[in-house]
Structure formats: structure tokens, C-alpha cells
Length: 196
Image 1: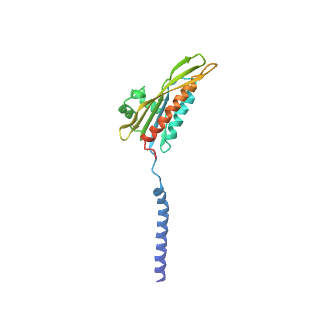
Image 2: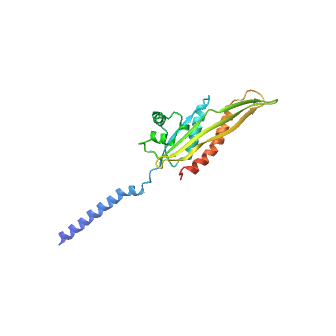
Image 3: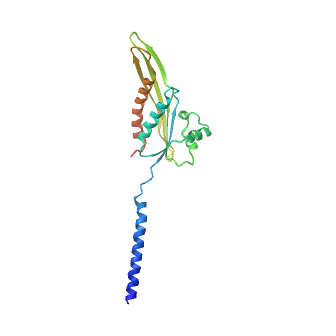
């Protein structure tokens, strides 16, 4: 009788110990957070200026800063994939052509933004001189799984820089116009992407 009780108690101890170990192993799966949606980002700078690196960094930092709830992928192969399907100017590309290039990629959204060459106009008056810069940034946001645009448009802003004496550079006017565009793109990203 004692052997039988000992065997039952030992069996219960083994079963409870195994169940507890299994529950501890299974717990991380229950606590795991859902994976963040994946966004392919394509940032192009065609300003053709002496300060292109600064403009490119401003563009990517500003857009990426608004998409922190996503996993971002910025890979040069994305532009190569687009080129292989015949897309050389993404701002003019059709949605289906872009989606065709990304077929088979594990991507939820595509965000494209491009700084186009600024239009610069110099002016001189009796007391000062200046530069007026018009900057355009086309933006496309595509929901890959939904096969639809969340946004497809352009942002254009004009800003100027002037001085009483000496030469006036174009950088300040271009950066000022770009900053005005970023205020609008921030709001657009928040309203169009499912940002949590």
C-alpha cells in the first residue's frame, strides 16, 4: 500500500512538474507582441546641389521619424527592382508597375519621396539682393496588400533668402522651403498611414 501511494505521489509530482515547465516555455508566445508592419522606403534626392547629403539626410530623418511604429527597410535594391520592370521615374510610375516590382517581397507599405531640382530665381533691388527657391517633393504611399494608394501627390513650397551686402547662397532658401514641405508631409503621414 505504501508503495502504491508513493508511486501515485511520484507520478503526480512528475506530471505537475512537466506541466509547469511547459507553461513556462509557452508563456513567451502568449506575451509576444505582433510584428510591426514593414515599410519599404525609397528616398531620392535630385536637387543636384553642393549640399545634397544634408538634404537627403533631412528627407530620410523627417519621414523615418514619423514612422517609428513600423519596421523600415531602405534598400538600394528597391530602385534596381523598379528599373528592371521599366520604371525609371518613380514620380510618374503607375501603382501596378510599382507593385509588380515588389512582388514576392514581405512588405506592407511602400513610401516614396523625392526632392526634385529646385527652381531658383535671383533678384536684386536698390538695397538688397536675394534668391527665391521653389521646391517640389512628390510623395507616394502604397498599401501593398490592399493594392491601393494611400497618398499620391506633390508638395510645393517657395521660400526666399536675402542679404543687404555680399552674395546670397541658395541653400538657406531651399532648406526653408523644404522645412515648410515637411510640416505638410508630417500631417499627411499621420493621417494616411495607420500610425499607432
